[in-house]
Length: 225
Ligand code: 6PG
Image (cartoon, rainbow, N blue to C red; front, side, top):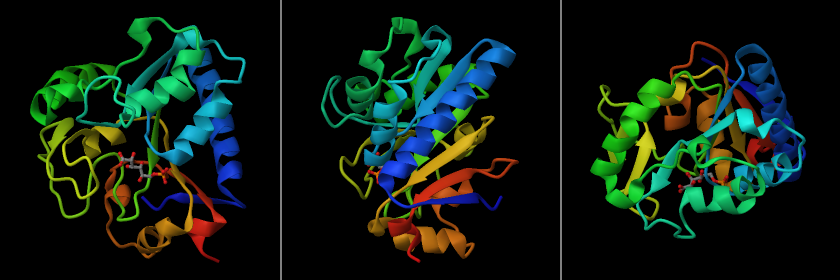
């Protein structure tokens, strides 16, 4: 479905708006269902939002964190998405270990994906899935020109065009199994991918089959006007 584009002056404004949206969605979800499940994204733009989010007064005991993708690197490697999430957000919050579900990508793409699959199956629908946009249109670790098996919720990724080559990613259907989908897109380098998306060309970010309009927060540098 065509996204709802939200344009902001710069990356800081995108991060601020994202943190507000995440916090408010959590409040609603907790009011209605007692829990809030959030799928985290990697990248610099989400990182800025996480720094703001951790300052909010929230009922963190009701939050549950998942990851949209992970790089196949040793645990605690600084380039893992989980490392970043801990460093800027999770380690600041009063969480119990069972509230954070890291992808065991250190086991390699196949094993990591297979182990995360039942957790995703049993945790759907997520309240909110956060995603970034790569310069080539990728999102999570779903890259252009790849056709992951449609019968898997979590897929192994080999030969990713962006290092490291081995990754584990939630598949299109798993990312679509949510009540809210929020993309954070900043910086001039995203302009071409975003232009393709706006023109209706298929890129991985546009292929997530949600039955509602995803929200995309974009800064002017990425929007390009
Ligand atoms: C990765 C990154 C990547 C990132 C996008 C957007 O695993 O390679 O996480 O997918 O999400 O490139 O990144 P920025 O938010 O830094 O622009």
